[in-house]
Length: 262
Image (tube, rainbow, N blue to C red; front, side):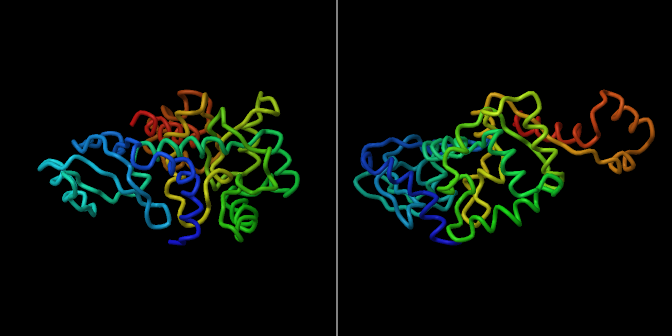
């Protein structure tokens, strides 16, 4: 993994947290449905390895040792504490801090339209927009597109999370974002807000971004061939006749709703 990317990705965390090293209380983050264990809350002591790892002091007891051995964390015992080396983004406070930052990289409708006109990419699939526009623009610094200095003012905290398929037309995504919206509306689109280079694992925590938005829009393009794979005919008719939306849109909605429910 590119250490330059990793350093840049976490430097803002270091700037914010350096003044409170030795006093800030942190908690191990868990995923939905995962056992939180009993490590409890620890004290943030220092940052290590290009600022991607944190050293946290937890109370040292048999249960704590068992959890640390199970998770295979590196640790040493000192002054009746377990000094544990943990990836920064496995700590709840760091994870939330990063989610707030990524949520703040939404793009305004006006900037989105201007982008499409500038690059004439209305009919491109979204993956091509990423490959031929986003990657070349960020190759030198490997930053997020929304972090490019020359685009300051085009991005801000998002109100609407745009869920879409990278194989669909980019113009369809813009149309879904613009429908009934003011030009100053800010929407969150992954190709702009997520680093498209190595070291982007933390950016992929979409769940936290969605929770910080006020609405979610699923953008899809018609895929007529999808309905040919639904058998038997009764099953296909039930699927298509619930409403008049396209088959792919229904399928994608099921997936997104599943993510939110979990």
